[in-house]
Length: 482
Image (cartoon, rainbow, N blue to C red; front, top):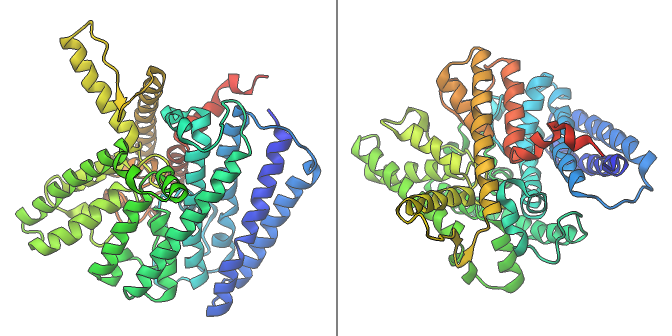
């Protein structure tokens, strides 16, 4: 374990994060709000802590190994989540306590979108911008983690994508090619954000709201500058733009990278995960729209409008809202909520178990049925024309098993804090899938639950974002042995 190198990297991360206080500072100066001093103070404190961590080990140079990758990935979100609390706590408005500030900060970084804050319209513009910015930066971090880091760590079957990454990626060493991959992904991510902002602006949002909502849309975070979320604008055009960019951001960014590098789109239609993703969305949309229309919840046009938006928003784990789906009739609240368990594609900013894992579990189930009929047959599981190694299938099933166990344990712990079954179930599901909105007492916000419940849900967000194993492996005694 190269702790000196890890300390140097985290120190650099903190110093870089301190620079991201500049945009909120400029926003605060432009709108002359009350949060300027809070961001200046936070910037100085975060830079000072990062500099103190980096200075003693600044000259240490060692190759990072796989074991270091687990620790860096976990500490990245934990450290920056803690640093991100400072503006929320220092500013008089909102002036959050530590538990609430950490919950809000980590929710932004993990792009969960669960919030403890209400009355957003009355907050300083710089605080609103900062919330959106956290999700945007977290979304980019997630893409780099999923495309460049997790495949090499072998997390839950994600080594499936190692062969599709640019350049030679070794199993035991994090190579400089990660920096090249991350740079290209940054360009793609920035382009999508700018395109989304311009589309929102052209559709009627003012420039501030357009930029703010584009960061949360492409980051699939779901934070908004209004309590009513996207529904505040009451615009079918804006909702259509949001649907388009949520879907784009929920696709594997490796596909976008390939399109950018080779100037082609044909590979999108050949991707098994993408086709399964749209098949699931199509089936869910058909049931949602039909049920809303059949039950006379809305007329046909509004059934399509609200049904499609809420389905895509929840299925991609963005969590934006135009109506309260938790009060929709028959099975719809549970249907939509269950869609979030599938989530977005691998290598996207979406949460959930990921489409590729669900697809492989389904194909494995079909294979077992066929094996019962033909016990001696050799039946491979294929993605496209490529057979999937059993080692990867085992990793996917291992991930699924730990996902269920984690869900059960966290739900029981939440119920022990006094939450009812529906609230506990949906809160854990929402945070583990990095969705945001839940059912029951957390359908609107998380501000009314206890601090203990918030800490548990913050841990759940972290587990969900780090694909469970990345964090749980740190609890193994063998991990720390030389």
